[in-house]
Length: 282
Ligand SMILES: [Zn+2]
Image (tube, rainbow, N blue to C red):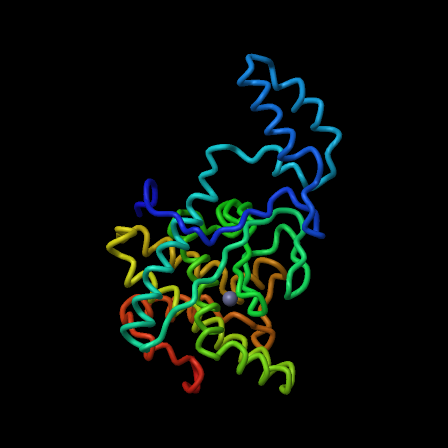
């Protein structure tokens, strides 16, 4: 796919290097600014930055090391821009409604937000209460190294899936299903969760369908997305983590289901084909 030199979204908020209370941790950015000033004045900033390494609080390393050329952030901003373009058009043309863009919050370490507290190492997620997508960019590395899901299009799929939850929020599905889950048994709640997640996969596929003129995705990209859907299926994850599979504990769907619904969205491109709730076996 092509993502370099393309439009980046303005809806990206970089919260790296902040404490859970949202206060910037000393050192971090200030030190970098200072180092740049020293560098501009012909000095050697390595002394300053080197001296800081041991002094900063754990988990703030990212803020010290955040590179000026930040490809992970740039990539996420471009994909978010693509989702804005696609969903604005799809909402207008297919639903006669106006799309409200979500924010993408990049974090590292811990972040407090309307849905609770997020920890680094968690995969990306969507919070309906503040309508933000949260991502720790190190998850890309986890996907490639530990989940067997490398590739830029695999990473794009993950963002598009979270934006899919935002679409569910705007359409009222997310709140409706979460209310129903609260009044259900654990088993039923899990089943509803699976249907919600499969629909987000469908929306990610729908995004890929309509974004082709932007991403110029090819066969290899499609394989990357489908492989990612396969690797993060509940059965695949459970097998990897505990060695066996407990179907009633599934919350996201099997590898087969996740690939199926991504592909369905990719082939159809129509919101109305993504009803994962009325089928007996989605
Ligand atoms: Zn999800």
